[in-house]
Image (cartoon, rainbow, N blue to C red; front, side, top):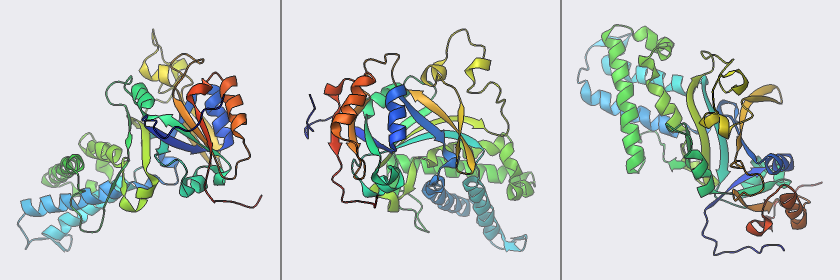
Length: 341
């Protein structure tokens, strides 16, 4: 009855570390929760791309501007340009009004850091999701509103101007060029005060940073490389403080003759939960495909090193909630991580 672990299985699997409460919710509802990325503890980890974009922008602007004798605001002209670029990048880092929802995974199935940080100190589980199955769901959403891919780990030392891969370097060049062009447009209009205050970010021209910010969520400094992280992100270019929240992600107040793509994938619409001293918005993604009695999304469940579940308990739940247990592997962690009960 129980499926043995097959080391020859070629299906790509990524693992979502979670508590037993979350496991039960995922199995019972066949949903995966995407939460507001601005509320996550590690939301500031994605600064690597911003730092290299800053360096590339400075390189571009210094090659373009050869003047060096003029002074502005008490600084040399070129020093002033670097100062403005630093302000623009800092403003992007501190910007938390762009709504983005995220679910995180790891290629590592039994990693101590993940058990500590996300697996309830080893009392939870790591759920192995099929990469292709998630990718197929994402492909149903048009216009690139959702992305599912591996995080790129890049060196972001003080003087780095590239990240070592062609696609990343192309992205950095595009973002840096947009920053420089925006900066010069405001300088030509003698409106650098708007750059310094950050007011320009609310204008149409000031929206240059949104693609950069969205791209930055898939890049981390190489010091985090052991996480082997994948991210599933919903990026809808929605500004929290400016939108009509009576209708956005609120299907009951949206008059559609038939459900749109997002409504089919997130049928419960926008919801909120309390976490400590904060309230976090989230969307539950339905991965059942409309069939709650046949689903190949979950391929494996790893029981945490401090979890009292037995494999038979997990198979009982899987069968009860309509999963084909012949397609799911259940294993116990080999991690030596233990906590006092």
